[in-house]
Length: 124
Image 1 (tube, rainbow, N blue to C red):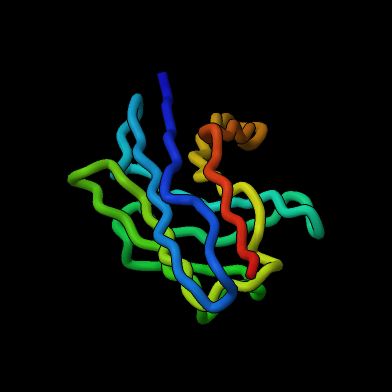
Image 2: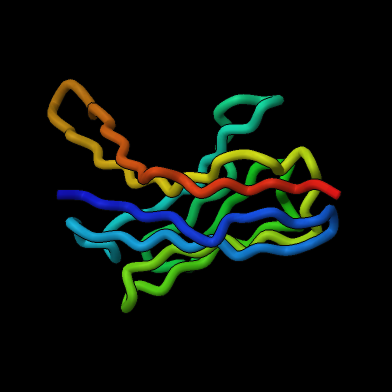
């Protein structure tokens, strides 16, 4: 059974930092790229960042580029999101996402797994 457990959220002042973690189990973590998503009051569901299975390539949404850093420790089956210079607009619930593609000759059907999320609140 795929399980993803996010942690590390909390209340932080604008300009502060947090480090989120996502511990994975039930699948071969080092075989899959991983993604961070968030749900915010303003934008709803938003893609935040992604990292390749080996960690050599990363990508970020425009709203977090230059402030957030995604990384992973495959030996610990853990995904991280270092968030610096946090802004009130970063407030939301953060989820790590694991996608599995079921592919055949007609293409691929994606299936996404995520955990319970971790709340991040940026407020003075």
